Amino acid sequence: MTKDYPPLKSVPGFSWLGINLGIKENAPDFGVIASECKCSSAGVFTRNNMPGAPIIVGREHLQDGQLQAIAVNSKIANVATGQAGIEDAKNMCRWTAAALGIAPELVLPSSTGVIGQRLPMDKIQTGCESIPEKLGSDPEFIENFARAIMTTDTHPKWHCVSIDNVTLLGVAKGAGMVEPDMATMLSYFVTDAQMSPELLQQMLKRVVNKSFNRLSIDSDTSTSDTVIIMANGLADVVDAENFENKFTEAAVSLAKQITRDGEGSKKLIELTVSGASSQQMALKVAKSIINSPLVKTAIHGADPNWGRFVMAVGKVFEYPVSLDDLSIRFGSGGHGMNVNAENLESKKVNLDAISKYLQNNEIQLEVIVGNGSYAETVWGCDLTKEYIEINAFYTT
Image (spheres, rainbow, N blue to C red):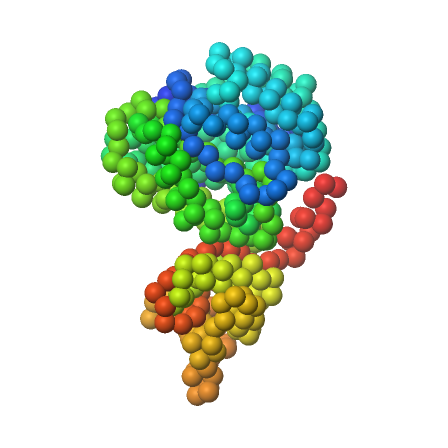
């Protein structure tokens, strides 16, 4: 088990695998989650108008709210591959289903990686045929799966919680092309709770909106974003409100892990916009700030250039903010530093203190835009030279 990672706990009735099929040179590149019985299931997918073939097939398979397995490959996204790519995704489902003795419609396919390349289906088929002998439920199998779905991630990501007498486990990947709705982000949750597909779908949308749809790395919405939850019902019925709270906690944890692992990133940024006149205003302004390359580079360099925040607020044309109502707070609690018109006038702004604060690995910011009662929190990361190097030579 990897040191210094959150503890992993198996969920009754679920098995996992993560193996190398030769899509990547050495690392795991194919993963499967399988349940011993049909699961109530729900999903949320990218809103990109060029969705990958697995998204198209996955939406079809989820229409009745039932799944029993998920099959994922990394390195190649199976996007912009036309009808042939759709057939490849369906074949991944057929071969996985045959290996598990279930219907193909109970398998959800996922792929992540480079756009515009066909999958090596001979390798995929060989991998699917080996599923029964390589599945396992111990934590090391879960970690192998988490590693198999990685692309530019530097480490696997998971979060496990107990709710009353049930277990919820989430595994995710994501490091770049991240701007929800949602992120180049695959995230899979499994639980032994009893819950209807209808309730799960409603709950998942609320959870995603509070977590994955509040993170951003580079403002690019992926073609492959997927969040799935499968509930096999092997445990008792759980209190829905308590379950949703813990589900949200797990999703926020994974969202932060993704943001912290942003391609080349050094700093995690948590930004709250408060005092807004509506939720839409708060979120729009927050996204404008967290996505600004000028803000992100200033934070990376610990440059106390608060004027970039003013710019990012001001470019949200539909929600004008008066300078007299604008306040920028660096840090949290009683030790935070405020920049506003009054402090500027009285020369109370300590730029050196702000610069020192911005040297931290985790940055908390609050931008107050008025006297309204709405606030939104989003997460992002700094923009570094490494991000450019990773993406300038992604396929070469």
